Length: 451
Ligand SMILES: Cc1cc2nc3c(=O)[nH]c(=O)nc-3n(C[C@H](O)[C@H](O)[C@H](O)COP(=O)(O)OP(=O)(O)OC[C@H]3O[C@@H](n4cnc5c(N)ncnc54)[C@H](O)[C@@H]3O)c2cc1C
Image (tube, rainbow, N blue to C red; front, top):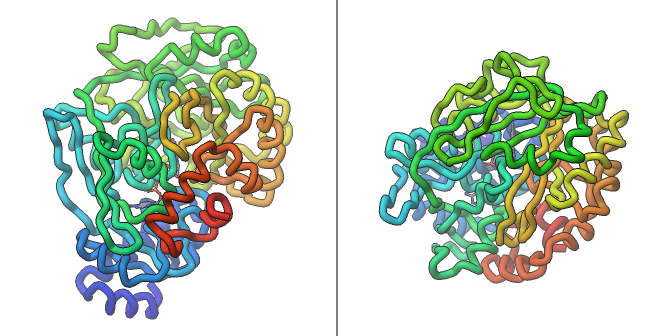
């Protein structure tokens, strides 16, 4: 840690806790004297980091600070979380989750990760409706960017939000609940961090369930033409992985929810694909130790819905990611349109994942009022090469009014992006009400939302 940073923090938060937030963040990112994102492709533009330990402290800090950004678990690949001025970290808030069994809700600290929350819920007999591919991310960061898992009937993770506690620019605490302020909550949940510092999130829970997953290898891409709906309906959550080579879906992961009345019959062959005989990583060349158990072995929901296990590096580690949402009805055309670019994509790609997400009513969700399919790209960490191919993908998908994932890399012009969100202007108005002087805005938000 740089001496300058150490002293700044010492003044701000007292010696005992100095080492915790910044040292932890630095050590996690493998670069102790520099704050950066998980992938290491974004060095944040300031080292000024304040750890808020309580709502009172957060209020005081927000009130007196001219400009800041709240940091989650730093898993975004673009600069949405960056700040030139100051960061507020909530990793030092450690309240126990509050479970309301009758209402079937749990209220958690904003920075709690799904990886910590899920086993806690399981011990008490409850579950969340879905999880992303990895459990390492914070609840507030994930919901603020419309993070999703898979499953044609499953909304993204933000759709489980029934309430938010947020400190707005003036230092006031604002509480939004689905019962009283549904419209404002719909605006605030996928809020990109622009409305304030979220300190608590209330999530809908449901009785726990078990799941199991089967993986099929080498499904001809042609099968999507006639059978896309069948494939998507095969499980509670379905993921298609392809490297776009050989007109092939390399792996199909079917996650079956047990006891849902709809069993998946794992035949040895399905639509030309073969049932895998061992656990696989989505990138076939990598070992499956980091992956959740497959081969039809039942387990708790939180150890089957993500692809990657808590406590292990998710995905490939050294990588970049992009992801594009298209309407579900256009999914097959969109997939084949991207397939046309395979010679440009494959040399720089680790793997593509294709997932279905149900429509929702959250203003800045890419799935706003539209059943969607997301085409995701895990890239080699070569930004110049990726930057050259993204406009081609965005061009191929533009007939489908494509929207990029808020937390991943894209090159779309801001005006185009804004035009794809019916509620963008209303969102900006609301944000200006809560934050008239742009305290929580950064360059990314100014460029893509507020200009
Ligand atoms: C290996 C890997 C796998 C991934 N898999 C998926 C996937 O399966 N599906 C998917 O959709 N995405 C996926 N992502 C993307 C990732 O989940 C999202 O980018 C998500 O935002 C990460 O949350 P975070 O806490 O790390 O957010 P950060 O990157 O820390 O912050 C994101 C935004 O949220 C805001 N924010 C964070 N906390 C608060 C708060 N308390 N109050 C106000 N604003 C806040 C920040 O200011 C910023 O604007 C993956 C990323 C990685 C690295």
